Image (cartoon, rainbow, N blue to C red; front, side):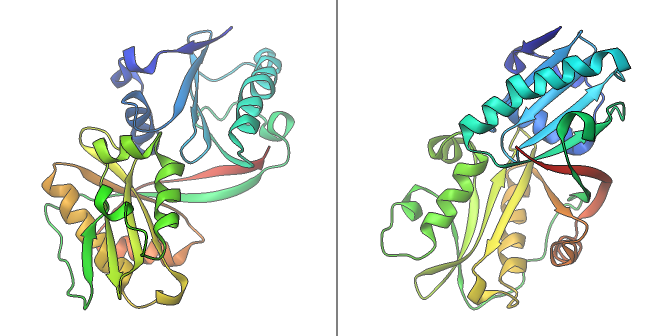
Length: 261
């Protein structure tokens, strides 16, 4: 009843999905994020997004009689793959609203999540007393710069490989005294969309570094014809404030679930 689909061959425009799921579908179909798409009776679909470790369910509402098939699929396919990949936690996003989640996926914590898009045509980049550089092969080849491994880990988490990031991705980093103090990387990249991953070193937080680095990232993305997007938990008020300060507009809010393998 479950069949694995070839996303590279699928016309994904046929799927009526939310904006966050659309971002993931396009990136996975183009090989920029690891993931798999499964169908159940060709009516309900399960997207296993290995970037942010999310199981999306969309399409036709499931019947009560199909729930045992879903439980077996989750345990035999998703859980086994997650253990192999070393994942400990996952998020569940069920757009069908048809699954009694605790009976299949175990104890879950509900989380309110916001998804933003950048709809403006330009961005104002504040002036900072530090350098903003591209995250590219030359930067990541350096051996005498702090936080390089954290940047590589961020890319490795969200991309199939560093080589794929260098080919299709991009990023910006703030440099102070030969140290990477803030890094902003593209994730879920497709022809005209991308997500944002951003981090500031603990000792340099609350100094405006993230605002300037992200603004420079947005400008670069817009120049490439790519609309950046931003996702955060509603409880992460620092991320909410930064997204709104940068000029992002909220596209959707929803409740997702956090579970453990």
